[in-house]
Amino acid sequence: MPDTLTKTMNQETAIYAGIGATLGLLVGFAWGKVSSKRNQSKNINQKLLQNEIERWRINPEYATLLMGKDPIRDAEIEYEKYKILKKKTDDKIALIQESVNEYLRSATKMQEEYDQIPSKAGKVLFMETNYSLWVARVQEERQRTQNATNQLIAHSYNVEFLDFVRSGMKKPALVRQMDQLDLETELKHNQKKNWKTIEKLTESMESRHHERIEDFFSIES
Image 1 (cartoon, rainbow, N blue to C red):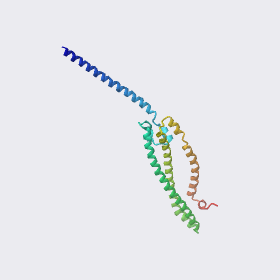
Image 2: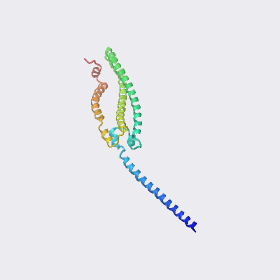
Image 3: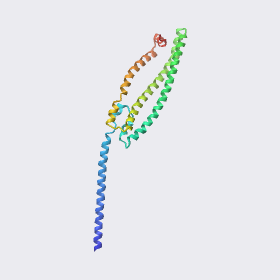
Image 4: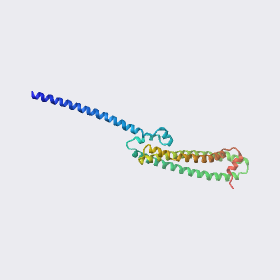
């Protein structure tokens, strides 16, 4: 009889222990879900909005960069990648500058050759061949220049953003800092001056009037 009683008590204890363990698991699971939701809610505030990405001109892949476990490390990795990209862009720009200098030298040579042609027919033929080829090549170089400029702008914004993040900055301080960047204003200001020059140059290069072409090749006094 005592053995039966002891056995029954042991069974009841085991049942209670099992119930307690189950309740513990349930409570732990529920608390984990609550904590996870809290962290997720807190983390979602660090997600970059679409208008922020467009306003700052940064890589859309960085939308969740601040939501990772270690944003500083992730930003450091991306920052190093951009240093490599910028080096490639700088090399490309160096090649463009070499080509531009060559075209400037060829423009001087064409001017000298043009001045030595005695007939109007010869001058017209010169303009329709040598000059038209020169314009086409210059236009190609101008397109390469525009592409390189766009890449430089993208690098500038992305590098600034990554530099802020790798220093430990998060929203909302990061938003204020990025919005204070005056690069876009400066670019707009510079573009106004640059495009005036480009428009005048393009008009001169594409002109069909002989007098304007003569002026294009004339030496300034």
